[in-house]
Amino acid sequence: MSIPSPAFRSRIREGMGNAILQEALQRATRSFLVSRSKAFADLPDAEAIRDRARAIRSHTIAHLDRYLEQFAQEVERHGGKVFWAATAREACDYIVSLARSRGVTMVAKSKSMVSEEIGLNHALEVAGIRVVETDLGEFIIQLAGERPSHIITPAIHKRREDISQLFQKHLGMPPTNEIPEMTAAARRALRQIFLDARVGISGVNFGIAETGTLVLVTNEGNGRMVTTLPPIHVALMGIERVVPTWEDAEILLRVLARSATGQALTAYTSFLTGPRRREEPDGPEELHVVLVDNGRSRWLGTPMEEALYCIRCGACLNVCPVYQAIGGHAYGSVYPGPIGSVATPMLGDGNGAELAYASSLCGACQDICPVRIAIPDLLVRWRQMRAGDLLPAWERLGLWLYAWAARRPRLWARAGRWAMSFLRRLGREGWLTRGVGPLQAWTAIRDFPVPKRSAFRDWWVSRSGGV
Image 1 (cartoon, one colour):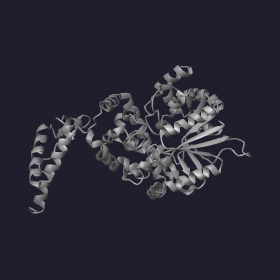
Image 2 (cartoon, rainbow, N blue to C red):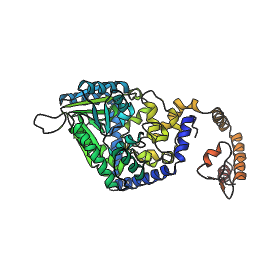
Image 3 (cartoon, one colour):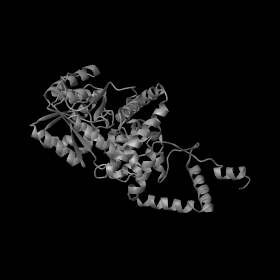
């Protein structure tokens, strides 16, 4: 693996050198994987349901224009307003303008990765509008002045001791490491925010085209507070998150929670259709749905569009050996992990092609993906399309020599015998523990098995009678 950017190298070294981070990541991801395995084991016909979920995403992305138009029409028919944002700047400008026109000085936010993607918090704060994250993990990260490090659990890298110190500093909480007491302190701090905010901003897990319904999946009640108490609800939705029907949404919900947190269903699964009606006692007076493109549509009809199938469950992060070693912040992107390495250069200005090298291409991400996205194939495509010129000169030369020799069988066989002999001399007791040159990267965190004396080629020739 070659990672050319000095900044990227620095972040990776920092992540790998942080023993506390390593412990937190291993503990959390291991727990997620155990829960996920049990949740899918309890789901009848789980593999068939995954196949159906993939088919739904494939069909939807192939006909995205039709379902987006239907969704927008239904939102407006039920009293909502739809804004089509081609870029992150357009989305932020619309929301800032809306808040200013209503004299808003504070907004309450539920968890939204799209808001992180477009830099909404910064845009609002520059406009003099206070932003308060109300998801507990996002609230912690906001107090720490950091970015989320995981799609589902943004504060996955924080220990309870770290959170206690933050709450003592910012909330005046007495010293304690007890989780119920820390949760109570956050609840007290956020309760008045829900009552005072005049705009609530949320993400959207799925938008149902046939009725214009917004589906929000959370494990905390803050999502419902943000979308019902403030008089204005702004829902940020990536254009790929639309689904054709309620039946399709039900299939995707079956695999989303199981993949994300190992639950059959999250604690709060909300379905919102339009603003409050006259006969309803609660809900927003206005609903604004901001449909965010930000580079997504330019990949429709290309081999890369499969990345748009993603339902943001985060399972690929939990199983990825690279993510587990370096953590989310090392990616320098809103979307870390395997899917982030694919999606990041697809969005916005297209930066982040080097992330395609932050992968062992082991295929674990594809195996665990609830909609079976071929993430390793997409990573290789990025390397071919954009990242090839990021390789250092010695590696480009090495790959050229590899391709040249591989087309000459006799030369290849001779070079292979020489290389195997060289590696055996470097090894100790059957293992290569300290490589030389490019091999140093392979042995930095693992031992490499020494090649056997009997090569496969020789075995094959003897077995096949010299053929």
